[in-house]
Amino acid sequence: MAAVNGYQNNRNGITQTRTAAAATSKPAIPAAKSVDTQSVLKRLQSELMALMMSGEAGISAFPEEDNILLWKGTIAGIKDTVFEDTEYKLSLSFPADYLFKPPKVKFDTGCYHPNVDLYGNICLDILQDKWSSAYDVRTILLSIQSLLGEPNTSSPLNNQAAAIWSNQEEYRKMVMKLYKAST
Image (cartoon, rainbow, N blue to C red; front, side, top):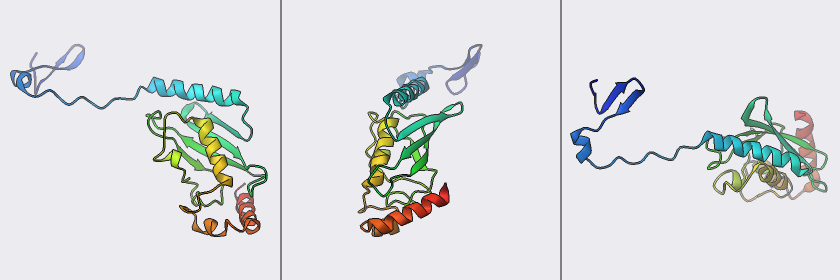
């Protein structure tokens, strides 16, 4: 069997061969760590069970059909806030390297909020630069639910919502107008 550029084809597939030149050259840079897909799947299954068993009021999430990397979630507006009596649908998309990167989370139901844009994108630090593998679906949903009543108006995605946040009566009218239009 002939070797071409340090590789040879054999019955078991293509394998790398060492040439005299390769033996004297510097060692190759190790490949980046690959993510164990099974670990991600086990983690998501575990998180689903923990979320179902928690009985946490006002939040829920389940995988879409047979794809455990795509979930639909629900959060209810917290009592005594302008979001009381509302319920929001969310999409959660988990990357293959979920343990190291956060899921992409978006509102499917229109949400008038300083930290949510017109497309449902959410500005929340734990979904960006403050991500930690210690977070799970439950803590993500609880954080978004908490964000509803306690927005970061100093770093808004929706400037109009941030501008009227201080007038809770007018803000509630805008929340309900958009909420009713999108449900």
